Image 1 (cartoon, rainbow, N blue to C red):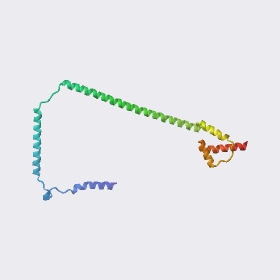
Image 2 (image 1 turned 60 degrees about the vertical axis):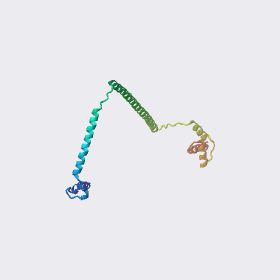
Image 3 (image 1 turned 120 degrees about the vertical axis):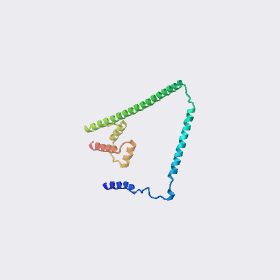
Image 4 (image 1 turned 135 degrees about the vertical axis):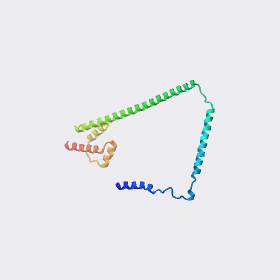
Length: 188
């Protein structure tokens, strides 16, 4: 790192030492007549100054138009009232936008708090080993029908899949119901 800094310092200083003295002879093709350039610049400056004085005298010769003072006051009053109206509209719009953002933020925090409360409640139920689930009454009827079915034959994979799709329940429920039925038949 130190070497890099030293190298950068040397490269930045090198152009200063590499400059050539300005008194060295210059080719004839690059010679410039400095006195002629100075004369041209002086003439341009004098011409500009003359134009400015002519414009100033022309402005002084033309009389200024003065409008009645009453009109100026009316214009100021109308400009002032429109400015107040614009400010009022702008501030009202800003207040509505801010109110909307605050309302949205509160709703989002309520939803977040509700989700957090549900999560905490579900975790508490799991710790107490009380799992809460919602039973679908339609599926409840199908499940009781499967358990009460008297068929004890072994079902093939295709038949299980077909029955599960037809009843819109999982394959494992059908397999479980079949096992329960076979257990009932063995104990009966």
